[in-house]
Figure 1 (cartoon, helix red, strand yellow):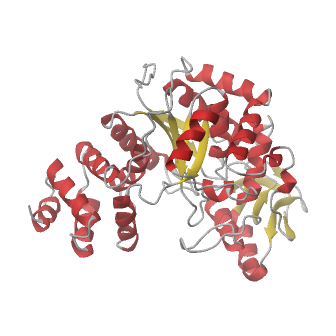
Figure 2 (spheres, rainbow, N blue to C red; figure 1 turned 180 degrees about the vertical axis):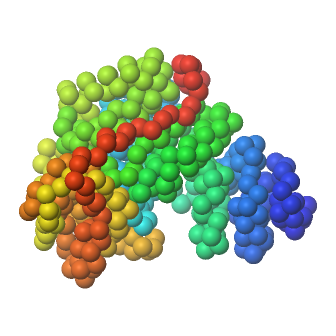
Figure 3 (cartoon, one colour; figure 1 turned 180 degrees about the horizontal axis):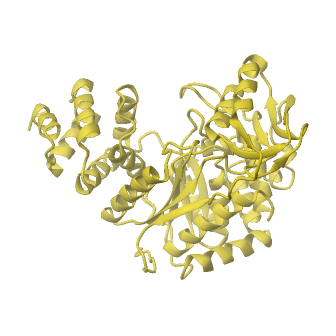
Length: 444
């Protein structure tokens, strides 16, 4: 088998066999196939695409390129959740302990943030003492004993994806649905959960700008999950404005704690209940999503979810007092308010620009080697549809280093759009992709 023939075959639009895809993934991961040939195949895939069987084969080959987490020692159904990335997206901070409080094991490996979207482990890392790196044995032990653990992805998980993504990033082949779907799902499959709930974002702060694009990606990922034997559902949610009010690591932890306390922003609470409802259904802990949502809402109101968050933080070496004293989290030395200049309605808040402001202030990374500042970021005071008067505070910048403050001011001023009349209410949940009319049950 020759790589040249595989490239030519896909360039001509033909379907690759399972053996050809495995040959490519094994050879490239091992360094036997050079970057220039891998790049040629990626470009051929970009233009010619992959069908559902090819995409599943690529995903499974990538998932098997390194270590795979064995969660069989944890009783019951293990459910994982993944977001395609957004601005202010702190759902895992709420969702993982909330679902665990309902008796469903959540074993989650998360990534670090890059660009304008934040990473869950960076947010948790802002909690004093919190350890995001656990050994596989400690990770499994904590899920068995506490019911939940959220840790950084191990270095040997899906090495094929690390190499291929780096190559895609420099060859203009990132925005390919089959390649995105296989990248996401290879990590989820290797992480060992029995069932997966996907939060696929659509809007100005998401990788998929339109609902149609997000739906296409959602369908591709759900199809992969099915072929890999995983119960999989994708919820398509809105990211045309930041989720909640806080954007920045410690700021988002604070907002997550408010939500776990039965308060918090209504959009964050709603999304967590919807995603969590699906997680309970997949685990067989609820017969339908509505029942699951009602059960989870009760756990929030009774403080059980916050109790589980406190337990998780303590188990991972963090200071559990943050659950009751959020002021223990890092705080910025300087705060600057951005105020409205006219009496209008907020018609839109460009999520990506808000995310870029937070990144400029130090809350995010331009490259994977950058160091983040856990204290800085943006807190919004208004959302789309709100009426504002001259002098009302639109947002507060939390700043430690003023180097990029002038650029941040310009960006945030341009992130808000106003209108003379109230805009229509936009849906938070655009749709769900999954098996219809089936009660999900795990076989383990």
